[in-house]
Each structure stands twice: as C-alpha cells, then as structure tokens.
Image 1 (cartoon, one colour):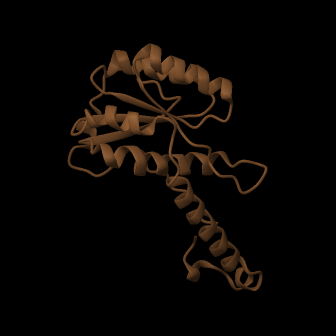
Image 2 (image 1 turned 180 degrees about the vertical axis):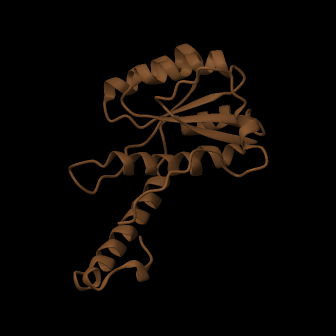
Length: 184
C-alpha cells in the first residue's frame, strides 16, 4: 500500500486508500492462513533438510512446467553440483505435479508439493500465488533448515556456467537485479 501522503484528493474522494488498505489486510490474513497450512510429506522433508543445516541451499518454486524444472535441475547438476536444489511445487495442474515429483525423484532433488494457495476470486493471480508460495517456503522450510545462505531461483532459470552463489551473497544480505517500477 502506498503512503497515505501519496494519495491525491481525487484518490481520497473515491475511497482508494480505504480500498487499498482493506485489500492489504485481506492479503496479510490470507498469507498467514496459508503459512499455517502443512504440505504433504513436510515433516519427512524437514528431516532431510536438517542434514543441510549450515550449507548453502538453492530453492525454486515450480508452476506447471516440468520441462523447465528438468532444464534447471540438469543445469544445476553441471554448473553447481554441490548446491542442493529444493523444488517447491506450486502447480495447479495435477499432471504437472506428478511429472515434477517424478523428475525430482529421478534426478535426486528435494521435492515439496506446496499446499493449494487460497483464492479470493475465480480468476487466480499468478504473481500473488507465487508471492504467497515464497512466503510459505521461507517460513516453513528455509527458516527451520537454517542454511548458511540460500538462493531463490526462477524455475525457468538455466545456469549456463559454474556459479558460486554463496560468494555472490558474501558480505551482503541480498543479491540480484534491482528493478525500479512505476508509482501508481
């Protein structure tokens, strides 16, 4: 939500700050409800992840593209063979979930089928779903694992050359491209 001082008189007369505030409260509530949900096999996965405590971890949230996850997994095996990859599946297509789970088993990747994201309308918002999924992964998997560091990778990202992800994060809390958006 924007700062209240950033709203124009016209925005105020139309109730925009109230609408935006109510939507923000709804989104925070849904995020908290979702964070409390458990994933199938979550306890077993946390046991597996506990062996990675203190190590660097790569995490991706997959969505309906088993081929992309396969490319990422194979590229990670070539470029970063010592970095464990956790695939968190946010797919809405059951067939894609099955294919991604099978791929992870075959390629020795950690797999978590994320719980269904709560919807507030019949038209799902892909960005909202992805954001809520990332928050769930942080709260329920990354924080309890206590890795030395972690990378959140897009599932369609394909590393082409060896990378030292831990070195890129050394001495700074985050690494990535900063994008400036438009104010609206």
